[in-house]
Image 1 (cartoon, one colour):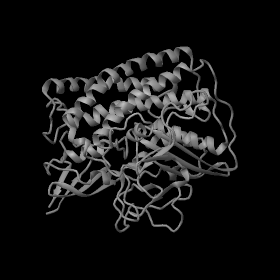
Image 2 (spheres, rainbow, N blue to C red):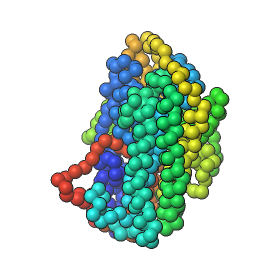
Image 3 (cartoon, one colour):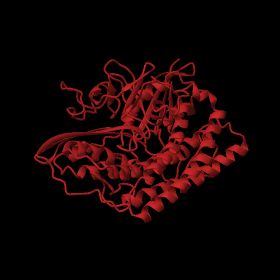
Image 4 (cartoon, one colour):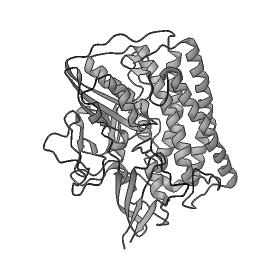
Length: 470
């Protein structure tokens, strides 16, 4: 007999994601990932000064706001024909690296650890809904301590970002040509000092912690595989003097790695709450209207595709494509890859800092073309992020954004092919249907973000978020 499980909310940073899973013989046979929030940031930008995009789009997310400042800046540089100096690139990529570190530390400890580690029973911010805790008490207690200590390190990463970004979240540093300020010797020394402490924590505590979890939850190396298609727009790559420090734009499918081609990106809306259209699905053209009454639709998240296939993006994709980590593609591999990437980013940031020249100004006056188009494609904390824009009469006439979570949490496509996370859930064993921790662990391994500034509170009462429908 088929039973339907509904989990809402799924993430621990937002209440706008829901999972529906059909269970037969204690295994998932069908799944839907549903994004339940319409944002409409692209609509807000129409008619505005193009420079506003750098700051407006950051408000999409409270955790990965720097990512959107990076993508919008790249789109504007492409549209305006601006080529930033190497010092400009180093500066803004250091800011971007700070966001990677705060996100990965926070995600691993605050959003992943509670699935595997038993936190204190009187802890007010989390209540366990399962009893699948396997760590011996001594190791469990060590990870609990690191869980609380990680808060200071994640906050330190934000402090580091603010040194060059002015403030965080929603920095005022990243801009066309690099950043809006200069890196003085004092600022460089401060960032290096904070980075050293963060690197020590990652290397000495975070890495051992993730390997401890993987030792006691080995079954998760066989869960959450999905399609095994991987994609990256490139990350800390293509420097004139330093070359590629991490990964170039690449894709992996059918066991082969090939060069990424942005012209192969499309976005389908067959199962999303948008009106069907006859025009092309290319990002520069697509501008659908909302329609919550659309038959068969179940999410605000569209269906990005590359060569008509769904792709996974994020730390595991980058680690695999760069050759840093190729143990496998699974729930546990995603978790390990994110921690390994945190260490990698810290090392990259140190290289960039060593190549900074203090006191160099990278800014000048820019003029906006009458009519132009541009795109900004970059890998960020959660994966491949793309901004596409058109400028007409010196104002924004079109804006399109495809986020990493749209790739990973997409709806089905016209041929009924499931989205990446949906496919990853298929075949997952569920021991206790009333407490399906296995589903949350797999979906959270993608670091999903529907809206990063939303919290749920019900007068101090615990909310039962799991429903089983016979």
